[in-house]
Length: 292
Image (tube, rainbow, N blue to C red; front, side, top):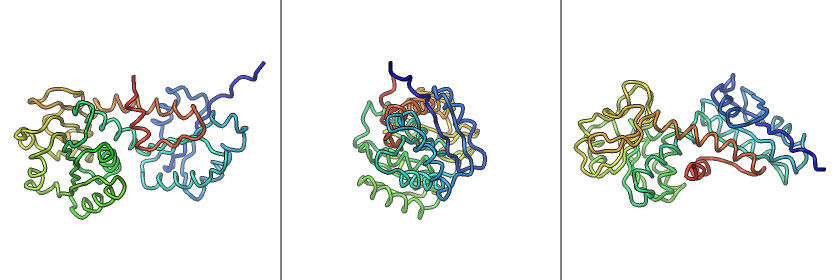
């Protein structure tokens, strides 16, 4: 008689002093049997935590252990991810999900909404991304470029928008147009040919008035990830999910959030299908595209 499968263990590595309760609850609701939570994780102290996950089970059981990297400071968590990957060697590795500040699952859910608005393809579609230089906006831009969209990246700081456009072009080989979204004429120019607009700006800040987008003849969809009034795109409600707003399909933060939660749970379950997954933005999006 074969031995029963070992229980699943998820090691939550959070860069904040207190690990995220939200991420812990999602892990449990996704079926994780044992959750080990660590806060204050840095690139300097993560190796021994990784070794603890690697050396306590035989190679055949490592698919039953996985890592989740989170925290509110996305660049800090990205540094932890790189340190984690460097700690792996040979067969000694476990699967990893990176979703600091919900950046990957939120970006994937937003891009899935854009794909729905685009009829399943974004190739050649003009997409304007507002507040694009934040962690979620950067990932949205990266995913859109990989899907063949033509992307305008907006920021209140034109220098930051230009830097991001160069970075994304180097990563995806797609073309990105930077613009200063605080200048009404620059924003209006980019909106003129936009089919889809995605806002990932800060909570409680309106970045796009209805008077601007309602005059855009090519516009098909608005996706606003701000859930705190005033919402980022005037005329879109937080609960909207493919809701017709003045002839344009609209998604609000809660409408996108339902999809995000489904992706998050599926990604957690995916970790335990092998010991060599590294789920970053692209992998998380692919999981989202296969949702039931």
